[in-house]
Image (cartoon, rainbow over all chains, first blue to last red; front, side):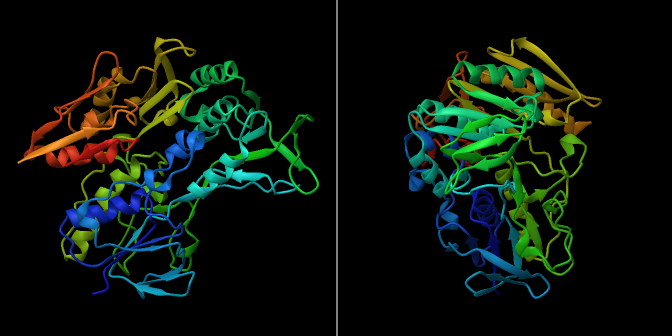
Amino acid sequence: MSGVVIVGAGLGGLRSAEALRGAGYEGEITVVGDEPHLPYNRPPLSKEALLSGVDVEGLQFRRKATVEDVIWRLGAPAASSDLSARTVTLEDGSVLEFDGLVIASGIRPRRLPIPGPTTGRSVLRTATDAEHVRALLGPGVHVIIMGAGFIGCETAATARKLGAEVAVVAIDEQPMVRPLGAELGAGMRRRHERHGVHFHLGHTIDAFVGDDRVRSAALSDGSELPADIVIEAVGSVTNTEWLQGNGLDLSDGLLVDSAMQVDTEVAPVVAVGDIARHPNALFGDIPRRIEHWNMPTETGRRAGATLAALLAGAEPDRGPFTAMPSFWSDQYDHKLQSFGMPGIADRIELVEGEPDGPCIVEYHDASGLVGVVGVDRTQELAPYRKQLMTRSAS
Amino acid sequence: MTVKVFVDMDKCQHYGQCCFEADDIFHLDDDGKLQYVAEADDSRRDDIESAADVCPMQAITVE
């Protein structure tokens, strides 16, 4: 027996290990991670940790006693794999054999090829990134944030709290427009503007200007913005390079079934978290990758149970997967929370309040309610979530 | 046997995700503030552990 190898030491890897134990798997579990840290919580990296200091140990997830015997291979990125030989090779050359594999290698920030100096350009994904960015932020520092999604907007809010001069450059018409829609997106933009953030929407950065490092950015509208630091939050790419050569479709993460099993005959393989393109019976069973914080836990629970069954020679539960996607965000003193999939809606209706104040927005498509977003109305969202959960019955 | 529940209210941001895992233990009051039961029967342990798992702020401790 060579046990289970989990590639990815984030939340999905941890929850998968716990679920394997919870389902009775008693064999060896090895978790491989490219960062040197035990699994830790990333959302604070654009908020409290960026504001007050990055304490990685304080951000670590509580680990259940059942996974105390897990072997952690940290700071050891996976380089390649041979699923039919049931091996994963790490960058340091060591080869790990497995009976079952969990793919939890997640995503990394997308980097755009923009001409000009690279020094001064940063992303915000890891604790190390956050420490680096935090050291550069301060009163009067000129910050350009590329991208107006959640990470970009949260980072803009935190940078303002630290006294920085903040400009957001994004191709989108409004911040967070894809999940929130234009009306609420505009409301969020005005909140940011009241806190002194300058938006340059509908534009891109053509080039960075500076000799040894970025001093400014040339925008597609011909303007030039000063920059001491550029923080790039323009989406993600999946970490699948180590899986190449196994005949898998890696075009958009890994396709899995409702049990989180990867479609391969050669070995028991499951995928979890940001990388898993999974069906959800609540939303028409169309396979999608969902980069929300709660999905590694939901998919990890299912995947762990599936792999434990497969390794015990049993048939896993292939019943419908019906986890409720949810996201939340803190920007200034505003709390945004969502259930469902507002991003797939074709009709958006503000049902309570106004986009600039506390409000509730419903998101519909032909099948009915598909999502809800509340701003500073968290305690009133439970009935919407309940209604969304009933979609599985239809 | 009982389960002891502790929520670090300095960390808690009142998102209420825990409420969906164990609504007899956690709830948001009319002001949107989290309220919870500090001690529960051991039969509730699994749901309370799930509530701790899904807390975005990782503010819940279970003993």
